[in-house]
Amino acid sequence: MIEIVRLAAGDERLIRAGAHLLRNAFGGSPGGGTNDDRDARYRRSVDTAAVFAAVDGRDLLGVTSIVPYEQWFAGRALPMGGISAVAVAAHARRRGVARSLLMRAIEQMHSDGQPVSALYPSIPPAYRSFGWEVAGVLAQIDLPAARLTAAGASGPAGAGHTTDVALRALDRAEPAEDDLAAVHGLYTAAVRTAVGPLTRTGPAFTLAKLAELDGVVIASVDGVDAGYVSWSREDFPDAAPRLAVHDLIADRPDVRDALLTCAGSWQTSIGNTRIRVGDPVIGGLGLPRGAYTRHEPWMLRIVDAPAAVAGRGFGPLAADVDLEIVDPQAPWNEGRWQLSVGDGKGSLTPGGTGAVTVSARGLAAVFTGYAGAAALTSAGLADGDPAALARLAAAFAGPAPWMLDDF
Image (cartoon, rainbow, N blue to C red):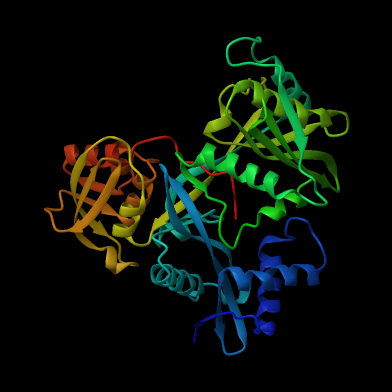
């Protein structure tokens, strides 16, 4: 018999077994370390996340975690449950272990007031069967480090350019609180109007951890902070080292170019870079021929439809759509609803004619603006009056959804 239990700090046997299961499923965690180190990291996750184990007596069958995050949705932060560390033991597969864990996770997120949930899927069909759908991407670009220094020539000095960009490094030994706050403020200013980026607040984020990165450099113009870049050096046993650029945040081209040149100066010892990009920085990179862009999809699930709509920001368009939501795993979402959007806000109230029938997956894909009316129809995620479908897609339309963090 499968039982789902929530792990607590004292559940040492299950914590060690869970850490071992995750090592089997995903290999060594970033940063490597001994088994004891990895056990300790998993043990700490019990304090900051809702960690669940599927057991049959003393036998551990599977695990999953819900990490409390917030995502920006067009200027408003929405609580989000990040599903991570999902693994089922080899001997327990085809017994419904993942189904039991995910159903418990949906119920827990609903109870905890997390109206949306996101994850990075290893097996998308498994999550689709529980209402998650691809709703955004994390974009990364692989290119030579020398190309970063060449970015300084992206435009002539003149309008929007200045030679007075000052750079300072975050003190890794004793990071100044003002510098930590500056980095987070610059990140927030760049992403808050987007759809999908994490707010980087809450128990999963500690600003002091920025000092654990190999480099964080802040740029300022005339004494005003205007951007930053952060990176880590990645070494591999059988391959050349790589510079992983985590963030490149800049509000003007000359600041961006100065930060790219700074990161690219490692070209004498590190030949390749992998840079995470989002809307604020992807334009104007001047990618060379042969650069490789990789889009890693993330999936979203609407856990509480009325709360998700009420907590999201919207554009200037006004729209009203009658929906019939089909969501057997979250029955509180099912039924007929009236969607009303106007003045940058939205609401979902019971009632209406059900002019558009939309599945949980369809609602997730349209909620971020990732899927339009044609995509919803062709994928079989929504059906109904074409004009109402067009209004539904238009109500959520906006910038392409993206994240800079994985989990």
